[in-house]
Image (cartoon, rainbow, N blue to C red; front, side, top):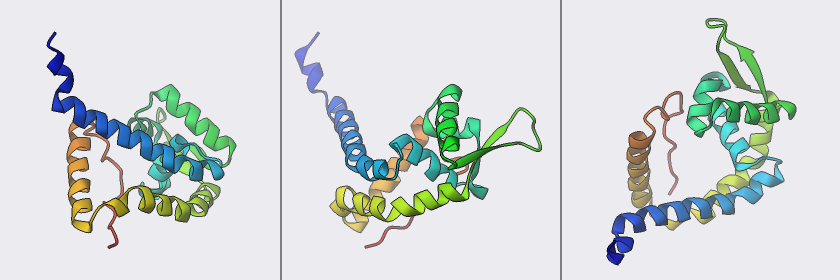
Length: 163
């Protein structure tokens, strides 16, 4: 195999993307941990709060979090033990169960959100001009929609950025 294959720019760009993602999660995780949440717990709660009625079918939550059905069950079990979510049966389909954000879950998110947003500003959004950030969001949506076309289902409209 040609040694130059390891210098392929496609490897570089994906490597940088993964390193940036992992590094950003590492910078954001301590604030979440102070609130008693893992990044996965926080992600689940945020997806619920940004969904209509604060609720998602368990299968949709699993898909949005890239989890198996057993994986999302474990996350929801943990969040339910903390009274952050509850399960509700679907009135229309007995096979479907919803994860629903509770008042305590909303309060926990409110309690951590200001510090989380400060972390995002410090480690991410402040690194870009408003125009660069707009282009980055557009580019990330293009990538997300290509690799995970169902992820946009039941999500809130795109956030606005402050300058």
